Length: 153
Image 1 (tube, rainbow, N blue to C red):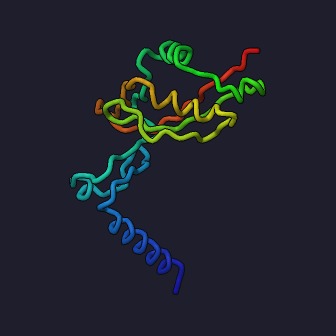
Image 2 (cartoon, rainbow, N blue to C red):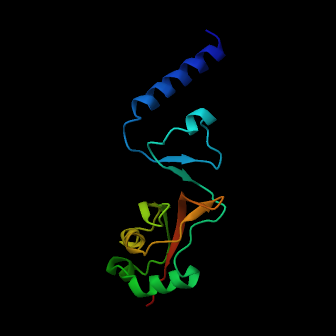
Image 3 (cartoon, rainbow, N blue to C red):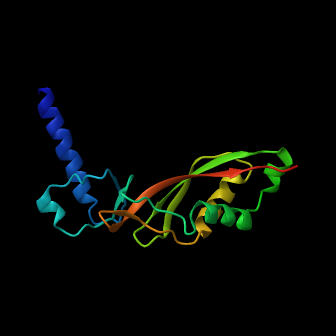
């Protein structure tokens, strides 16, 4: 078999697996250009497309100042981190859906000592955001946010 035949077989296997999973609810990461041909794009999608970039990215209600105030009001510095004097940033990735709800939050770079759990708790209790838009339409957008913790002795 030549290289193009092997690649074609692998592609067909991959498409077959995707069609077998069609009935399962799943979130798809995508670039700003859908990969599906126009005739398939007209069919209703089983799962939302999550964009990495949008014309207007999602924003915290109240902007940066509102976010900082929210963190000051709600953050509870973990005793383990405070006792060790641990400071730094925890990076949390989540999806802002087309309504502005936060979904699928996960720590992608943490500090430990209870700070990762506190960052996740803060993200999960955040008020709804202003959703991201593409061509004026609200869409699901993946967002990564650093949450800074400073131990004050």
